Image (cartoon, rainbow, N blue to C red; front, side, top):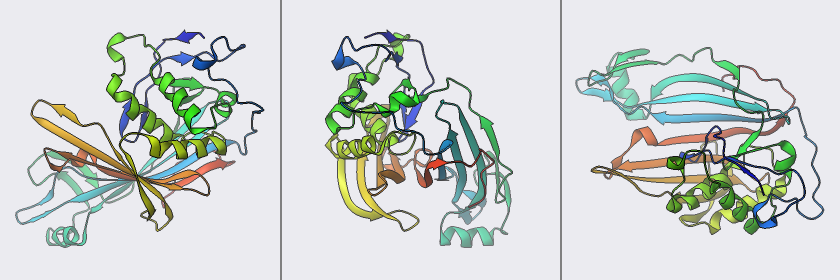
Length: 316
């Protein structure tokens, strides 16, 4: 098997950065089957079911500093809509639109009204400079720079190679683990051994929405997820839109920086009919207190094929 260690763009999943780990060459007959992405017996390339693999996501995060003044202090929530479109040849477009800032809770709304119901903020309660508004912006859509391919576990795969990912839980986990361990061009960018499981867990989750793998591969990812360290079942749960799915809680590796201790946990909800992600919620604490910069909610509004061309995200 040939490994190319040229740096590639990073992949992020479940709030954990997946560093670039080179490219696995997949052409030609497999000389080392255990290290090669080999097609499963009888596997065929599934035709695309639309012009683009498309996701539409609602993202919410609490601003890390309170707004207002005096006793009228309040927390606000920032919201945005993002969309991605990727054609089978690997070209991709990204759309983004801010939906505006709003008080986080009923109590925050009351404090906001006492503060004069401002629609724009240039300063936080502590005087830090910000630029926030309750009005949605115009949004944008751009052609994404980078290789025309599908990033999975640090590998840049073609559409055909996506269709050949292992469709059994053990085989899929093994392939991802080998992929994230591929040597890198920069030795200091190597993934620590104790971070490999987190990379595998994150990749299993991203396969449920980010790239157009066959449903059999998504089923394998779903079945493999609860076998990973730090993952436990939550049973049937509902997302913010009231949709029911199977929930899992994922405890991430704790991080320490100087005197800071950061603990993070992600809850994911999966639609077991479509075998796609419905939502994920990341909660983090720093020295036991909420770490708002690393606490957010992501709700998948659409996942699947579409013939609609890339455009500025519409308001929900």
